[in-house]
Image (cartoon, rainbow, N blue to C red; front, side, top):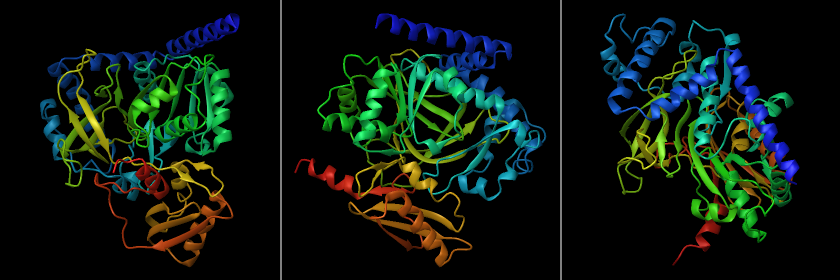
Length: 462
């Protein structure tokens, strides 16, 4: 056993050395990104403002000179010190604005062949296609390593990633080997699959587990149902990094108790990378090295009254292929006052609202990842918004707001796609509506599971 563990450790060190050597050969972009991210977290406020001003000024000039949308909005001449006022004068950009005319936001300095293509998950009913230049894509990977390091992750170390197989571009075996990553398809979950994940986690000797928050909750619920505590004495797991939104079904303290290790949250978005990461003191620090954030009073007053909610606008300081300036994520957050005992000087945020994500259960008892629910409708252009609701064990309602080209064939196609996913005994009803109501944060909740609401109500005090 000791020799096997030693082999795993040596393998991780070898991968880490190989990764750094390859980065050095390429000119050290990854190392430079890590250094910048670290430095930004520890800059005094005045120094950080000056550093961000330089990056913002260059980005504004680039967007003015190379994009059709920003060309008329940014003057040819302005002083670097005027960059922040210039940014504030620009319109707030939404996902629907970019989706309506993506070429207007794509930089003429890049070709699609020179850029990395990505897409959002479609959690608000619209999956946005976007582009990153190669340097920004490298920074995304550096952000994963840097903020993952706050939870104990190191480059080259054996780790497991639970995600639906269809949620991103498939990775090659060489890529998985180089990253020392055990990739597990968590798109459909039942007790047998969750048991396999537990066994694989132990046998793979993964030290860090990455996964979407709802998948981590499912894993904890399975262990609780089966009477298991953590993953057993042979497990080498030391940290879990939760992505995709805050834990909602079970409290974080309860998840940590069941899984036997700390859970660190990372607040991110596909199109702008990491926005904030949770430190050792369990507080969320803004990623001031990559993004500039603005906070505006939330349009709704329906959020809880403990603290003023703010609508978050993000300016990506690093992406040149498709600049995101004053981009509205439709997330409402609460600012966290004071300084953090970890010593980092970056601003803090507290609660995040607007990322409600619900798993769906099939009549046969399998849990379906909510991203899968959205992805089924990506290619149907005849709908503007949708909302999927699980009413009972086998009854489901899909509400859709029609767009151009909508007809009876669209209704039949939507119903058929969900029946293929959920099984032949699923009763799927598609309803045409004028609008999908907004959540308190201003986002649309695209998946609602009333079974979870009923189950949760059984455990609330009367």
